[in-house]
Image (cartoon, one colour):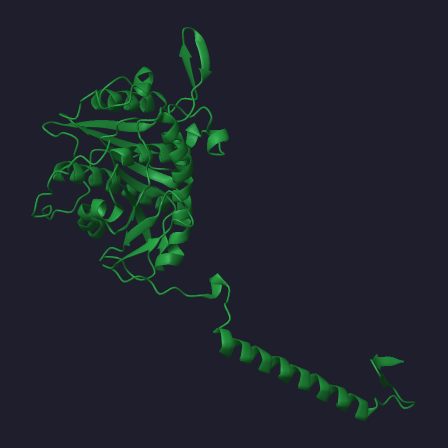
Length: 364
């Protein structure tokens, strides 16, 4: 009866001891040879890689920042700057705030005025560099948004491994000018990833409508004017029910109403001038059942100042706290709370001593 290849059982049921000993010795010799070979390979090439899940990333220290290239993962986002708030505590899951600059801008300098607010509200501040193209050309805007919006999803998924901190699932967004356009479009395309949006001085908007009627004829309203062809351009359908869970704070300077510089292609859907277009966009959101508000700041042109920034961050913080409260109640098995409104969420301490200088026009 075969027991091991080449080993037999004797008449008294005893295994041939010499045969077993020889094979055990041969087996151990082969194991030793393989181990020596692996050791030689590691000495020659360096440590053998282990799976990503087994590698522990040292968390970025509170109050520290880092920059990293991201163009290989998203060609429209060549670099990213990230700041961890001083108030962050080890093991916490941080609330991300993405700062979106305008034409000709860069992430880090644009986000610099937000650092103090990030410390105060314990926000992970994320400031990508965006490689925008011609914002006046609808086709180029369409192409940009088709690559930039999914690129932001890729970025947020990669961040925990980059910085060593867990982050909340839903984002706060602050965008200025072209960045405000991107922030509002991202929110319409991927609403499940967004909590609240502060959009300042956008020159164009994508309206939350899939069709448009002209001369009695209804037709698909495509990107970048509407959301009628999202399934073809973004790979997902417009989800109005989820968009209704979002909150939009739309602002524009009272002197930021020149019309000659704005592309005319959006006139049939939004009208002319930044104030008019902001009013129209907010009206469309409200008609669709979305929480939205318009804020016109007198005496300000195409820029933002400390007053704008303070109100925008109050808005974002308010909805972050409302969301946290609702999640706590939901986990406790209670009913969902109604959204809280008209509450100043900033602590009692005074705002930053040095007033933020108004930003120079850096794109539309």
